[in-house]
Each structure stands twice: as structure tokens, then as C-alpha cells.
Length: 537
Image (cartoon, rainbow, N blue to C red; front, side):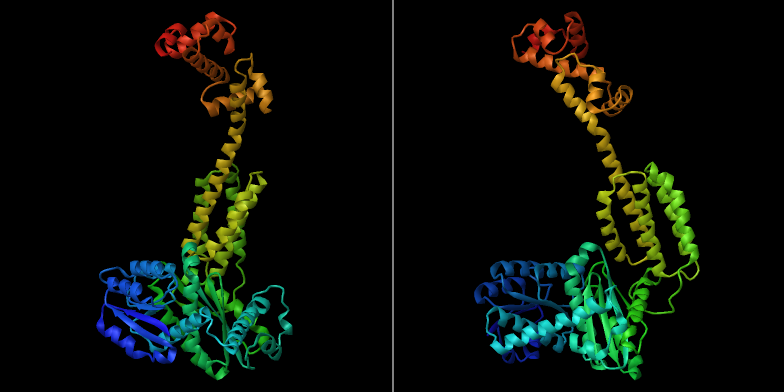
């Protein structure tokens, strides 16, 4: 038996959960009920339950704190959150703690039952209570799921696939679909958020979205399959043409349900892009292209909408001329790493682009990514080291795909160009400083010898005049001043720490004229050498 504890500060909610499910049929037993966080922790300590169903907002001990401490008491305990509490901090933190699922009030029996069945299956696998037949069925189910997902990778999203050869019977056989000769339609659910939030939440968010869509559309379709990749959930619907309006309404209704849960996630936004329906499976690529085009339209029309395919527009010729004009305008500022001028030009370009009649979101995205690519090309042209920026550009593309508006996309472009230039400036400064470091090290190792500016210039590989200019610029003092400083500091050490006479010290630190040494030391320290020794030795 799987031991279950229910925790909620509302007595009637606890009663509802207890009476809503036939627990014995699930091989589960409610062993305790708690009405605050402290009681819940005591029950975990005392009863060692396998599962706790809890409200996330609990008196006595905050729900999240209770989940964290509960995991410390019993590491393998599962949690299901049932709550109407709609603050992101709670939902996201609960996900980080590894809760099995979250359900919203009012409690839906079928959703709760579905989640409990998954936990039951997980528990049986963990305790190895499955029969050989059950294990084979689970393995088969897992393999079929992977094969069906493989259709997206192999046939739909791959650029190297000959889709003209796709046949329904062959696809059904190879990928375990139940496609019928009817309508096919691709949809995409796009999740927009910060990259960090996507990494932490996409798995849980994606499962909830798929669950909602499958539940609503499953009965209307011959088959439905989804595939999660990065920030997108791709879906294929196969249905009778006569049900086209019904399927669209169901999809819209499902999306409305998804939006209800959106407030659980801070700064996460959802959009659905719907491609046109096609009657030939070999035209799925056209439906996919329409869905992708619709998703890009959110940059102009906003998120939180179901955006549908319209006639794909040919790329504006004026957009190409705008990019060419910008590239010409930023070439000189890029050569001298003038970020302010570049930002000004990009902002002017943004206004031009957004004022283009009938421009699409896809065109805006392509333009912004082309601008960034052109900037890297120009930096390479001027021999700047951009090896680090090549990796940086991959992150730019990932974050660009997560921008939910044209404004946000241009802000990201400006931010990344400024970062790129600052990296180059820093590298350039370090490159300029390297010969100065080498020169200083050489002087510190050879100060006792009669070294000259030419000696040091030859050592670092520069001509005398340029090295003298660079040394003064980076050090704030010329070569002679620095050499004297090194020699006199060494003389101070010898005066304090040894009994050497002043004439010997003068010779050891590289001076050949004792009178000049005394005069230089007095000027540098304000004391004669013998006065310095009396004071500090």
C-alpha cells in the first residue's frame, strides 16, 4: 500500500480529497490528515508516507518550507500541490523542490486521478512490484512514445528529408500512428520567458500543456501527437474535414485553459501558432511553415493569442536595402568600437522597420538576426578577435527566440552588440598591456644593470618611440622614471634590512654615481640615505 497524507488548512478540502477517490482501488491508503505545516511535518516524521497532497499556502509552517523539510526527513517522498495560490514564487520554487505535479482549485477529479495513477506506476517501478507483463507493457509504451516523437525529428523538422515520399500507411507502420486520409494540421505552442526560467520550468510546463491539449482534442481527432523542443511544443492534428471548426474551437478552449495557469509562472507567456489544414500528409511542411510564421507574428500582435496562418508574404525588398544602409552606417563606428553611434543607428533603423507597411514578425526576426551577424562580420573584417563572440552569438539566437515583442528583440540586439564591443575593448586593452607587463618584469629583473630604453624596447619587440609612448600611456610615467622608482625602492629595502654601506648599495641597485644616487634618493623619499636608515632600520 502507498501511504498518503493530506495537508490543507481547510477541513472541507481535506474531506473532499478523501472522498473524491477510491483510494483502495489505487492501492493507496490515507494514513493521516494535517491542517498546518507543523502537523504535516510531524506526520511525515511519524508515518513515513510515500505521498503528500498539500496546499502550498499553509499556516504554522510555510508550504514551501514544509516541502523542503519534508524532503530532508524522507528524501523519496512525492508531493502533489493543490492550490488556488497564484504567485509565481511559490509555483516555481515548488517545481525546484521536485514536486510531482500541481493542480488548481477547484479540484478536478480526472486530473487528480491521472496524477495519482502516474505516482502509483512510479512507486511500483521503484519498489519493483510490477509483473513481467506489466514491465513489458511499460517498456513498449515508452518505446512507442519515442518512435512517435521521432517522426517530428526524422520527417517534419529535419531539413534533409524528402517529404514527397511520405505515405500514411508507411508512417503508421514505422511510427505507430493511427493517421487517416483526412485533414492534417500543425500547431505550435510557444513559451516566452527568460532563458533561466525556461530551463527550470519547461519540462513541467510542457507536460501540463500537452496534458491539457490531449484531453481536449483527443476525442475529436483520429490521432494527435506532440513534441517538445526548446521553447516550443509542436503538435500534429489528424481529423475529419467536417470537424475543422470544432477542432479549432477545442484548440482555442484548450489554450484558454493554458492561459488560466499562466499566472503561476512569473514572466512566462504563451502563444499558439496554427498552420493551415492540408489534406495530403506530404503537405505537412506547408502547415508547419504557416504555424512558425504565425508564432513570429506575436512580435507584432502580442502574446496570449491564438495566431493563425495567413498568406505568407514575400520578403520586403526594402528590408534588404535597410540592412545594407545600416551596415554602411555602422561600419566606421564599429572600426573604432563606438557603441553610442551604433546604438543610435540601430534605433533609427528600428523605427524604419516597424513603419514598413504589412511587415511580418518573421521578417523582423530575420532582420534583427541578420544585423547581429553583419556586425560580427564587420568586426572580423577589422581583425578583431571575435572567437569568444562566436559562442556568444549562439546564446543571442536562443534568447532572441524567447523575445515576445519587436521592442524586446531590438533591446536584446543592442544589449548584445554593446556586450560584444566591451569584450573586444577589454581584450584589446589586455593585449596592449601585455608588452608593458613584460617590460616591467624585465626592468625588475635587470634594474642593477645599465639597461636602456632601447634594451627594453628590443625585448618586447617595439621600436623605441612607440614603446616610450605606450609605456607612458599605460604606466603614467616614462621609462626613466619607472626604472629610478624600482632602483630606489630596492635601495630602501637594503637600507632597512642590511648593514651594507651606502656606496655598495648605490652600486648594487644600478647607480654608478654616488652623488647622483644621494640626490635622487633625497628627492624620492625626502630623506638622505643615512637619515632614512636611522629612521627605519
